[in-house]
Amino acid sequence: MRLLEGRSVVVTGGARGIGRAIAEACLEHGGRVVLADVDADAAEKTAAELARDGAEVLPVGCDVTAETDVENMVARCAEAYGSVDVLVNNAGITRDATLRTMDSDQFRQVMDVHLYGTWLGTKYASLRMRDQGHGSIINISSISGKVGLPGQTNYSAAKAGIVGMTKAAAKELAHLGVRVNAVQPGLVRTAMTEALRPEIWQEKLAGVPMGRAAEPAEVGSVVLFLASDLSSYMTGTVLEVTGGRHM
Ligand code: NAD
View 1 (cartoon, rainbow, N blue to C red):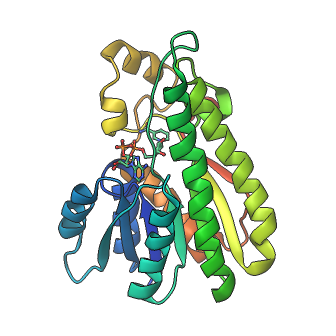
View 2: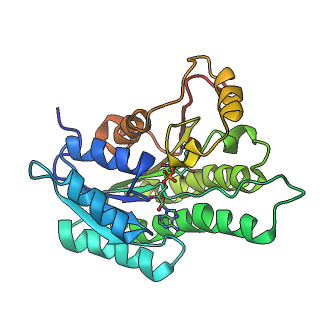
View 3: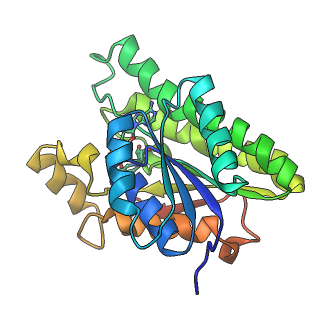
């Protein structure tokens, strides 16, 4: 069964890591993907790698904190594929520091990419989705938005904010046929986490009942579920993908 046959999917931060895995899961299930990333060259390279066996992947350079970029990203999807059926707000950064050493730029950059970027994407995609009468938006939060993690006052606040935004948007958009849900991954093996010191990895893993980090594809499959009609009666929900951590 192909869950997204012919549907268009926009993935922000799609050039690598979890975003790439989400794109791969959607393509495997017949989706047509706009791979958006601030690193336009990386998006192009990844799109070329994924566009095999006739898969449709359109790379688009997009900084999710730039309104015109986000508007253009959504417009490019509609032009190329005739609709915007799914948006995954995945682009993210970390700027970790303790509260006492974090500067205002580190705080604002993280807020900008996660909160403002997710809001912009949701706004422009939902305008299209309203006209179509259907759509699914998936926001990538983090377990740090549920429990708060030391060294991440900025990131934890932004990821918790994404949960609030998801629920507010779900309530606003439900009558238009647009569903909005969020995913909270725990520790996932990507470039974002590979820079962590070995002792921090061990400390984090010690709190995971399943005893290992997730592969990006294990987040991709949950996003695929939320994108598809298998989750047709779900909106405003937050799914944890943590191997049992912080349950
Ligand atoms: P990653 O660093 O491997 O990839 C992030 C991608 O986002 C990159 O391709 C980057 O170029 C892009 N990006 C960054 N800023 C952008 C911007 N302003 N506009 C557009 N694209 C931008 O990270 P990842 O681990 O794959 O994380 C993806 C998402 O999952 C993020 O939202 C992250 O916060 C979240 N997350 C990750 C983990 C984890 O353990 N890796 C856990 C929980 C949540």
